[in-house]
Image 1: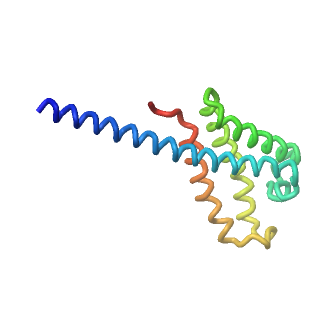
Image 2: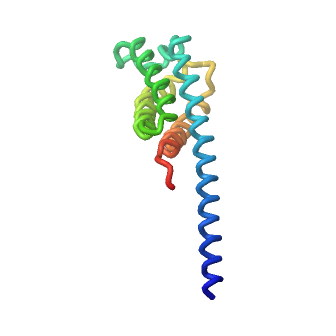
Image 3: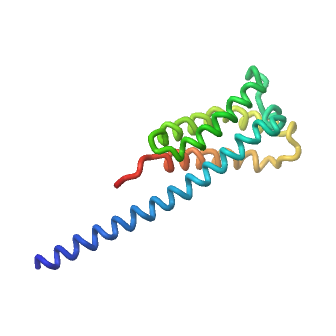
Length: 146
């Protein structure tokens, strides 16, 4: 009986290790996706700021400065996701940044007529996609469990 219990414990430990490895692979894949999202977005803030300027609500001051600052923070956050000591902080920063750009998404939805090339359904879909992105950022920036 004792040998049987030891075998069960070994198999249980093995399946936990396999589960942790699979979880790490999914987290790495999520981190790659989030990184690419913010690297592309961050670079575009500098390479072509015009689309970002157009979606900013008029009540937010210093549009160009906001576009450049948010682009810089997108790039810093994307890099930070790969540096273990600051990964969690980078995740919190990207979550905060993603929430901070919500007024632009709301503005676009409320003034869809100003953006005739973007279907209204896409403006609606952005909200759940943004929520999913926030969850993904949070999840892939959590510390690994050993």
